[in-house]
Each structure stands twice: as C-alpha cells, then as structure tokens.
Image (cartoon, rainbow, N blue to C red; front, side):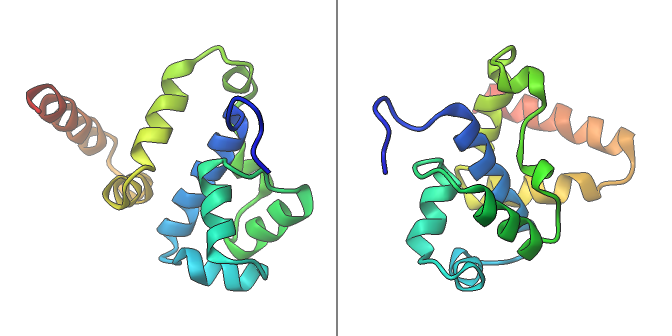
Length: 129
C-alpha cells in the first residue's frame, strides 16, 4: 500500500540493505521471494521501500540472508535525518546491479590502504564523468 508522499526514508534504507545483502549472497529476487513465500514483485517493492516490510517478515528475511534484523537499519543519528548524504549514497549505489556488486565486495577488501586508494579512483572517475 503506497503512502501519500511516497515511501519513508527508513523504509528505503531497509530495502536497500536487503537488496545489498541479497546481492552479496548471490540470490535473485525470485529466490528470496520463494524462501519468503511472496512474489518477486513483493521483494522488489520491499527493496525500493515502496512497501513496508512487517517485523515478522523482516525477521524471516534476516534469517534467510544469514544476518541480524539490526543489520538492515541505519544508525539512530542517520534515522533522525542528521545526515542526508548517507541516504542518497545508499540509494544511488543500490540502484544498479554494478553498484550492488561493488558495495557487496567492498568489505571483503581487507587492506585499508587499498580501499582508500580505490575510493580515490572512484571519486576521480566520478569527477571526470
């Protein structure tokens, strides 16, 4: 059910985190939907924040995706709206399969200096684009 004014920010954030985790595990929306007992369209709506996800369903998603329910929520200061940039960045990176792949692989880069160097490269490419 759509809300007047569109989805709430926390619903978008939770959906984006579900999408990232699902992608990181190599699951399709259809595969996740089957394990949840819903349609893949419903998973799409959860991932975009178009539909809110109930507590019980979110618990099931966390179980299927081998993580905690808390992993899907933003830090409290972000949830209050103190930082818009984090919301926008997450929304943009999860908008494409390539972005989700980068986001999923990023924490697997163990060397902090390599991550910093890659971040500099990405920023430079973004300026040139």
